[in-house]
Every structure is written in C-alpha cells, then in structure tokens.
Length: 348
Image (cartoon, rainbow, N blue to C red):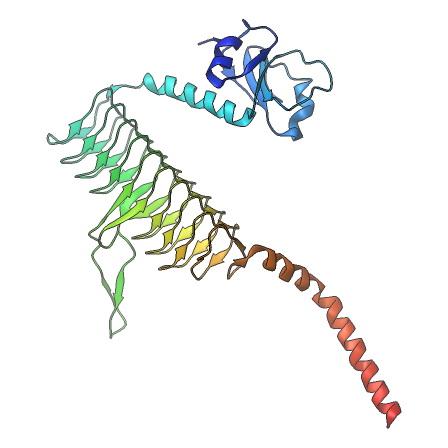
C-alpha cells in the first residue's frame, strides 16, 4: 500500500518541501531507512542522520533549520513526533480492518451478543451474556468471562483474561497476557494465626480510550468497582489492587504497584517501580518519580515527589546533595572536635 507525500501531508496537516508526488510504502527509523520508506526527526540526538538517511520522506518540526541540503522530501509540522504517531495509528487501523470473522475452534455462548465487523481469534472463550461491541478485535486464546461488556472498537490482544462482569468502554486496548478482574488480595487475620478469605464480589470498569500494557493485573473490587478512568495509560507489568481508582489521562510506567482502595487523580504521572500504599489519595497532576514509595496522601495538586518515603522533589534533591557531602562534613567535625580538645588543654 503506497501513499504520496501530498496524501500524508493532508492527514497530518503538514507542508511538503520537495516532490508532492513521491510515494512511500513503509516506516523506518531515520538511521536505518531506505528508499520508499517514511521516517521522522523529533530528537536532535539523531540530527546527523537527516543528512545521510536514504529515506524517501521525512517528517520534521516547523522550527527546525536545515544546516545543509537534504535529499529526501520533507513534511514540516508543529510536532513531528505527534504527527508520526498519527500516521502509525492510521496504519494500524487499516491493518486491523483486514481482521474480521470468527476463527475455529473457539467457544461462544449462545447468550452472547456479538456486534458487527468483529474478529474473534481461535481458541477464545466467550462466556454467557457477554456483549462484544461493533468492530472489536479479540485475538486468539482470550477468555471473556460471563456478563462482561466490550464497547465498540476494543482491541484485546492474545491470551488476555477478563474475569466475569468486567466492563470496557469504547476503544480500549489491552495487550497480551493481562488479567483483568482477578480477586483482590483480601484476607481477614484470625485469632489462631490463619487467614480467612474475604470474597471479592465487585468488578473492574475500564472507561473509554484506556490502553493497558502486557502482563498487567487489575484486581476486582471487594464490593463496587475498581475503576480505570477515561484516557488513562498503563504500561506493562503493573499491579492495580482492589477498589483502586485511576484518574482520567493518568499514566503509570512499568512495574509500579498501587495498593487497595487508593484514589489516584487525573493527569497523574507515576514512574516505573513506584509503590503506593493503600487507602490514600493522590491529587490531580501529581508527578511521582520512579522507584518512589508513597506512604501518605498527596493533597496539594501538581506536586512532584521522589524518594522512599516520597516527599517534595526539590527538598528531596537538596537532601540527596547534603547526603553526598556527609563524609566531608564528618571529617570537618572531627577536626573541629580535635581543635576544641587542644584549646581546652591549653586553657587548663
């Protein structure tokens, strides 16, 4: 499938500098591209390749000033990275449209409601009273438990497990191996030292435009719902515990963990391997540095925190700077103590 520079510029609202009719048929990194491929330059670490690449078409920022002639045709846009992302999404949509129909073998309960233009891959299980919206793609070896709902245009990648009662909005993407709706970690300690399991009878609700990475787990609520709000993005290998709420347009990087009943606000950014204790609140716009341990609520919005236990970012950096100076400070204190002892002897 080929597209001309003019067609691509129309899709991303860009200006062509060069041959409007030149055509490309695939994407490549700027340092590896060959004739007939499209690339982009957003990070100036790769600037040198703009002048040596064999790419036919390159997307660059409006603000970038050429230092020498470029062989490729250029498309200038306000944000090259975002424009390239738009093109990749469009390419993905075109490829997904080619997937339709129900492969065999798979099991679909007679009470399930399957929408139009749906793809269901082989060895998938669709339980009783499941609703799958129009244009959904459910890849092979998935499990969609009873009473679950998938909104329109959802993409469920291979080996995803949705336990009973899971609710997805529209255009939700869940990557391979993720488990949604497994039991929350609820056990009541007993007088004899054993633990009594607390049944988890709630569900998980994932709102529109959420994307969840591979091998992430989101536990069902004890009662009510664990909720991932609209537009949130979760990376691979994340644990979200029972009754957690993740706010709209919040992003969480890999290997982070959120304990039960914590409420995370909107537009929060959580770095990789961060840990958040249960039953606290994280204010809107908070930034939590990677490997931080958050042990109490963050009430004021738009704070940046780091460390374990996590506290305000600027103070944390100052503390780290002081810590690095502690060996020198120790030497100075010992020298001062020796001087004081000497002065005391002389005084006597």
